[in-house]
Length: 195
Image (tube, rainbow, N blue to C red; front, side):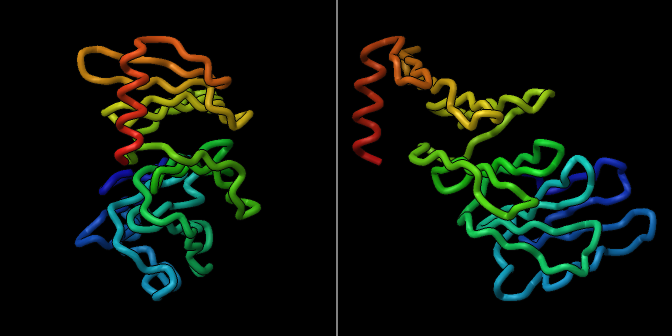
């Protein structure tokens, strides 16, 4: 998620001013008009957004998620019911989204407008996501306690790594096999019961 971003060809800039996204066309020196951008059904507090790699879409991120079709801005803004969203990545030739929000990771198909996969119970929220160049894997981390490796072709979590103070850590693979410090496992159970 970004408060300010260029699109792929550098002709558009997204700006987030006072919790409201603006897309500015540098070449034509004007704001891009977006149909129903501020209608009640698609309006929410925004923290920024991101362009798809092919410049076909712009994802507005914040207390909700809305997708703007940049090829035809006269189309209705597609508001998706994902609650608070922290991070979004476009992948699979910009046909899919990986969305993080409200303790979930969601894979969303933009063409068919449906959720493909959902990973629940991920705590704490606010992940950063890094995708491999071939878009087969994504590493998700929250900078605190949890790192996940997702296979985007099979929609599987390949492993989860949990880290605690004192360099205590453990890894669970996709079959929940445990490796690491037993005290870290106990600390996670204690942490999970409190949150």
